[in-house]
Length: 321
Ligand SMILES: [Zn+2]
Image 1 (cartoon, protein in one colour):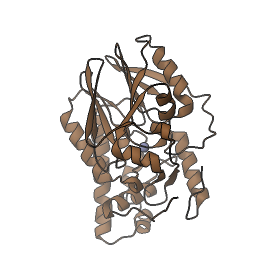
Image 2 (cartoon, protein in one colour):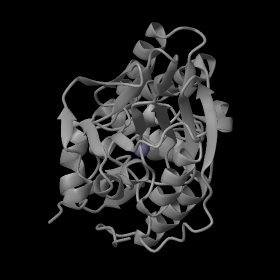
Image 3 (cartoon, rainbow, N blue to C red):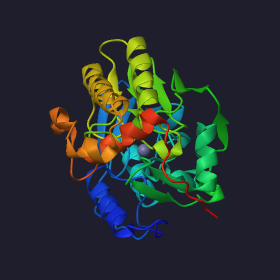
Image 4 (cartoon, rainbow, N blue to C red):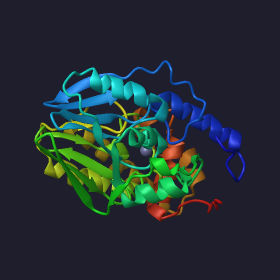
């Protein structure tokens, strides 16, 4: 991990390490040992599977036409992911398409090896841009994660602005862009025939969510995306979160309720001209303590996130060469 500009690198590094332990991360030391990671495969519905290893959850459509996956974790895990898919003994055909839900390294780290084995990587326009340039992921406050530029081989070769559909295995697999949620390049992926949706990191199960305000994310966009999606989906839809176990719409609604309530409390404090420090001292998010985790996003960091989202502040400007 590169040293972060602007000081307190040790603190940031500690935060990153904590984040790695919980849910994978947006940035990870390159020499991390992945040898002990096992890929757990869960049948979700019909021919859709969920794969958990390290990093973001993977959805896979596996059938006669071949395989489509949503997100691909980390490069050192690609052989294990390929083996787990082959082990289903459903098809000998390859992973033909990889769809990225957003640009963070724990969801796109496998792009280059999948591409070199013949997969076509698809993502929203801003995912390609951010992978290409690198930059900083963060909440505009104390959370900052350097994102190094991805190699050319890792860049999506098909990009879309609003939506794209992959017609494979008898299903219209649709990726739909929702602006300014977890990042500015998020896509939510629908498997309508199988009644499954992959939410990317617009919906996670590890507690208060990381919202990448520095990369164009906002709590307002996350709420809006989740409300629009939940309103359209059948009540019994199976929901694959960006991180955490298989979920349902009630879980999504509880998450949205928390986002709205905590946003309202922070907005009220902003209207009363309180500073972030005062909000932290007054512990204004204490009623939502069960969502706070010292290992990743604690209440203080979520106050920063909400404050910067609601005031449109992206934090200090960091220039990258
Ligand atoms: Zn993410």
